[in-house]
Length: 199
Image (cartoon, rainbow, N blue to C red):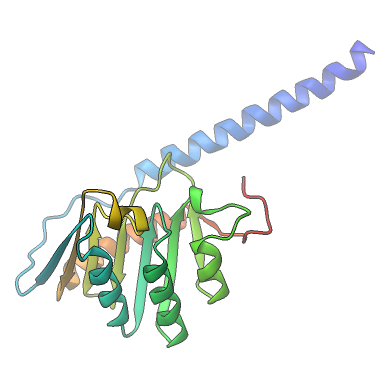
């Protein structure tokens, strides 16, 4: 009996070791291909800043989304702000190319912001090759960048000390952030939807 179970145990051990190595290799490969540091000239750029709690942070983000004409590239960690999620869905519905990269915490069996965007035909990827996909970024129309500490959540708006900045007329900055977005997308997996258990 022991002779029969031992090969199975060895095969399982090899599979687990192989999976661990693949995950570690994926993470180390990701680190090797990070976009390089850049110093950018932002002559002519304009910035709008807002703060939380209970400031204008959500309204500033929603306003920028509503002004999008052609494309919104999103990176989000926590993603539960109903006004922001709905604004992205409406942007997609009016013909804006919206694409999202989310942290793995957004992939679950329950209904989430990812589910809402999926129902609006927004392509979604889950960035799970790092411990936390902590970016809070939107790149709009190739010349506007939204960034800062502000998570796209109700809690960030109402309970946290946060900041958000919308930088317009800054195509060089948008290109740098787009390169990073594309790098992270290449290391991410398609969101399978809430009906599929995500591992």
